[in-house]
Length: 175
Image 1 (cartoon, rainbow, N blue to C red):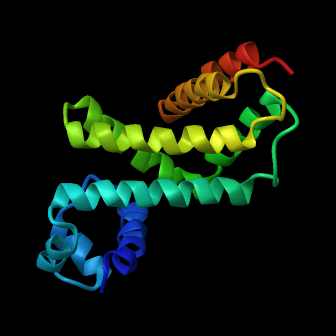
Image 2: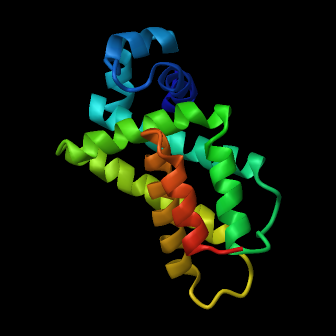
């Protein structure tokens, strides 16, 4: 087995079980290997988690691509509405659970989790930039603004207050 063959197996385990029980033995069992082999391939549990988070971010971006019409959106509102519809759908719920567990690790003062979450945000910014409408004056700034609104709305979804997120989206991006 290699890192490349282990990561999809570990990702499937994480999507099903989350990170709350992310100890090496159950992860290794799910991947059909031993905890020692995981350490051999990844060097440390934190390196494994870092690579797993990056792998999951790539899967998430690909899933968004699959859920999204091809090419750029017609408007900023269309883009944010499509992202929110996708991330609120059942197939994305395991990703969102993992995302908030990752963020919680960073908030808890774990620098590796904060760094991994920051890199995932970089992936999401690039994804947004590729899907925003043509001809924007400030593509990067617009992507940053949209990501902040999306993340805020997603956090509000997580605590059962989608109504607040929806109002913020409507105010920030009128139709």
